[in-house]
Image (cartoon, rainbow, N blue to C red):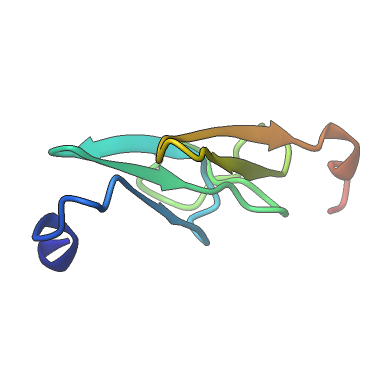
Length: 83
């Protein structure tokens, strides 16, 4: 974060493998966690617990004007018993 904060051109950081979708900010830098394409963790749980959200991925659009928009797309068909 210290490296990114030194460069005003950094507007957002996208990362994954946290098994949850999350959006936050640190100063002017937006932070976007990408959900798992498999099981989701229960938000706020202090021990392992599987959440109810379907697997998903994050769509990112980088505009010619330098703006970034993003949204999470869930894949409900991918979730079934025993998976």
